Length: 292
Image 1 (cartoon, rainbow, N blue to C red):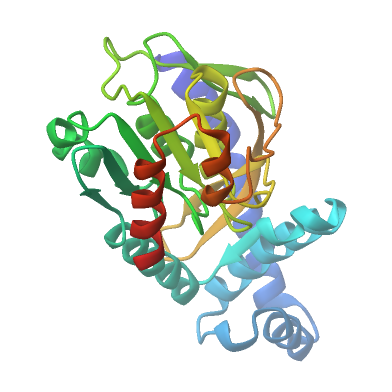
Image 2: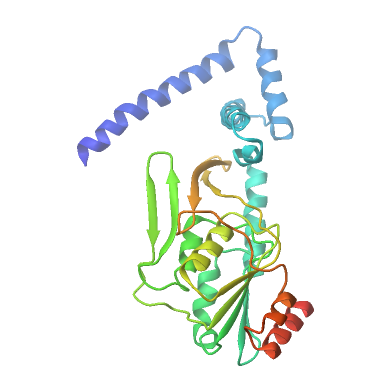
């Protein structure tokens, strides 16, 4: 361990010193200082501050991420993103508001309704209602307008619905491929049937969750239009300055090795003529969802 730390230090410390030296020379010794100021202001805009060392660091982060985005396919370009302090705070506030919209409603003795506005924080809510949820044979999981959450949040929720040792997802990182499996000793929730509601804004790890259930269970019906189709994930790094950045860090596949996200039907009403389910149950579900 000591040798490892020594090797890391021998690499990081010179690199940091080179960067600090570069920053010092540009900020203090560049002949046309006005051009340095102009460069920083043009890039940082309203987030330009009185501290030029912070400005320079933010400029480097933002420029690298911007240049990387230009090399990505157009649909991926918004996801390498530098977050100034105010932007990071707004992101966290929005995530907290989404968590507050998560809830479980035991509608009657037939079905539970699980509203998942985000996967973040959902596991705790589900476990707090586990006894009541397990008292119903059917579940409606509503992931409409769910933009996902972290990979860890997705795994934590998906494993509650899957048998032990089920494959949850397959992830391709830059330097390795990992298969995530369910290591829980028992399946927390078992239903006769699960209805999953989706829409065009269902994205990212919410789609991973959808495929985890769809590929592993034979009693799942996905209802709604095609989902967003975001088959890659990002990592968030928070800096000591209060700023942060997202960057694309992995691609993912469903347990079966595909990303087939096509819903089974466009809406719940289409299930009625099929006669696979109790018509009264479906009418109750449709009525409940329509009133909420």
